[in-house]
Amino acid sequence: MERRKFVIGLGALASGAAAATGTGAFTAAQLDDRTASINVVDDTNGLVGLEAGGSEYVTNSGGSGNELMIDFSPDDNETGINPDSTYQVGGLGEFDSGNIFQVPGDPTASESVGDVAIDTDTSIETEHAFKVMNQTNSTKQIEVTYTPNEEFPSGARLYLVAYYEEGDDDGNSSQEEGLVVGDVTDGDNPKAASIIFADQRYSDPVGAGDEFYVTIIVDVDEVSSDTDLGGSLTVRAGSHDDFTNADS
Amino acid sequence: MNRRDVVVGLGALVGTGATATGTGAFGAAEVSRRADIDVVDDSDGLVGLVANEAVAGVRMDAGGELTVSIGDGDPGVNVSSVYQFGAFVSDDDVDGITGDTFSVVTDGDPADMSDDQGSLESAFAVVNQSAEDLSVAIDFELNDDIDGNTEYAFELQSSQGGDGAREGLATSPITGRLTAQLATGESIGVSFVINALDGTTADEISGNLSISATAV
Image 1 (tube, rainbow over the protein chains, first blue to last red):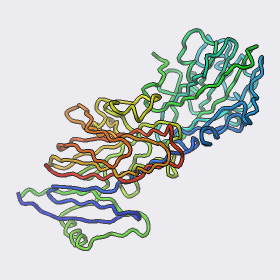
Image 2 (spheres, rainbow over the protein chains, first blue to last red):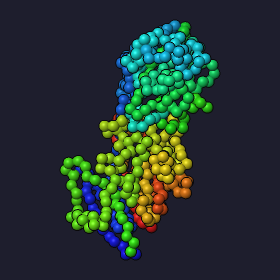
Image 3 (cartoon, helix red, strand yellow):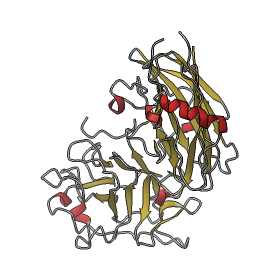
Image 4 (cartoon, chains in turn red, yellow):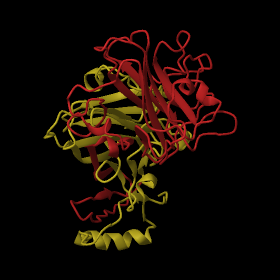
């Protein structure tokens, strides 16, 4: 076969030259300079964004000054949670009056969020500890887990309660999620150990550009005053292999 | 001689001050019009570059060129995080990049383009849309002067006969090249992992990916 040959050169982006050449019979092609730019950013600007609400106890000043952090001693003056007390950061106003008496996610929970909550009127959209934002352009499954530094003693409970406005409100309670650390649920309940917005029962994944809000409740009995309730939050998103499957 | 329509993938111009270069090239360009040569988006090129629409930051820019743009004004990779863009065939030799906290998402045949976007699990794919077998090379020209300790790994994956295979793995700092053979209609994919667990917000991975193909 006779080869036709023509070479085409076309220019270029404003910065740097991009060129592709091809021969008619296509013995070779070169596609240069497809740009790659990947930036590490503050939590608020992440593809999965984490942004503190208005409380002084939850900020975006963790890590090197750009990570979400929960700190009940923001001035390092060793303030914290009193024994025999309940602290709540964020509202629960939008919560369904029935679902709030689950963790949510575990009907056997005792005490439930509804039992310990001290403000169920304030809007969580207005006041929340932090929010988790899907800043990608496609729907994403997102889960939040909490790994305590030490096992919680009896009588100490931490609740992270989440509200996703765009979740299914048609009897599936997909708007409300929650996790609890401490002696609250009977045995291992994956649904109660994780905030799960996913393609699972009673749950919906988070749409592109959508967000969910999280309120924190710390509820302690007469526990020792040196009790450490700290830990680390882990946010998983997408088709993560370690994603909790509460349906299994 | 068999006449074929020849479609050569080229990027279009964007922005002000951009200039088309090449004097001889322009004469050839006129010839090419008579020969029915169109400039098309990357996705339609003889060497097709296809962004996975479900993967953040990998897309066709306004000029029809594949770009990877994560952060840089758009949402990016959080500090103290690990992100994976597209599925890997294997998590072998990626442990050093992902740390203990993250399990690499794997898929048997991520570069499968048999159902286009429906079957593609790679971040982006290179598809041989020409009539000839190709030897394809992807050159990574990425900066290695990252201030913090952000690390990354790119996996090149082939999809042949319904099976996926790792063709190569390149980890930071990369100034390397991955190669694969590609028959007509076959595809290779690229997926990548970014570990910013010890990164800072000054970290930026930037540079170019160049794809070259030679008939074999």
